[in-house]
Amino acid sequence: MTLSTVATALITIVELPYAYDALEPYISAETLHFHHDKHYATYVAKLNELIEDTHYATMPLEEIVRTSDGAIFNNAAQAWNHVFYFEQFAPRAQHHPAGVLKRAIEEEFGTFEALKERMTTQATTLFGSGWTWLAADRDGRLYIISKPNAGTPLTDDLTPLLAIDVWEHAYYIDYRNMRRNSIDEMWKVIDWRTIDERYNAIAAV
Ligand code: MN
Image 1 (cartoon, helix red, strand yellow):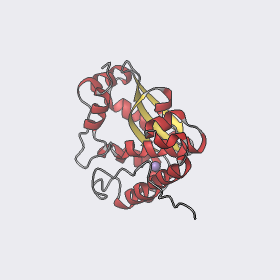
Image 2 (cartoon, rainbow, N blue to C red; image 1 turned 180 degrees about the vertical axis):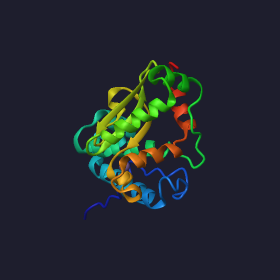
Image 3 (cartoon, rainbow, N blue to C red; image 1 turned 90 degrees about the vertical axis):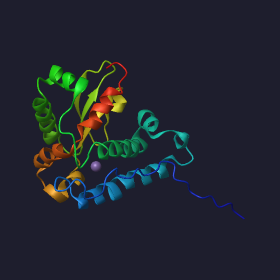
Image 4 (tube, protein in one colour; image 1 turned 90 degrees about the horizontal axis):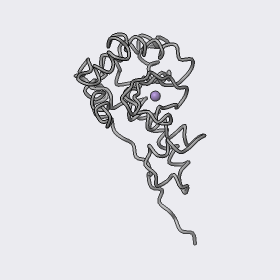
């Protein structure tokens, strides 16, 4: 007789914090169904397969990202990155940063428009699949960083603030090969209330 074990979900799927059609026309319901329910969910499922019966099985997701490599890192980072990405959008977004983040952006990049243009250009020109990030160090200094594949500022000991997903699955349904257009439209649903909160949570600022 063998004992049957029930597979438990170690890392759980985080649902979207808005309706699938809430970001239309900028990001369609069809894109979000594929992006969240297929791509992101598959990273979580694959990660759970890989970490079962390993020391990663009891770790929070962020700690797995910081301490793993290879396939476990790729699936863990993609799981983490996507939750972070989906949570930065809102249907009635605040279109500008405020307070300390606004001042930090002006100090580092000159103007808010200059920051958006630099991020858009970096994301557009990142070869292949990956992510372009706005991140901050412990002193609150801002950085724009592009990373291939599942790359994330978490492994550079930086605090991520905003993520642009430039994998084709993020935009191909709505924008086909027009990556730059997809990013120009994405800004319209980035909720800077959320980005402000992420920045305000850094102890030094
Ligand atoms: Mn994606």
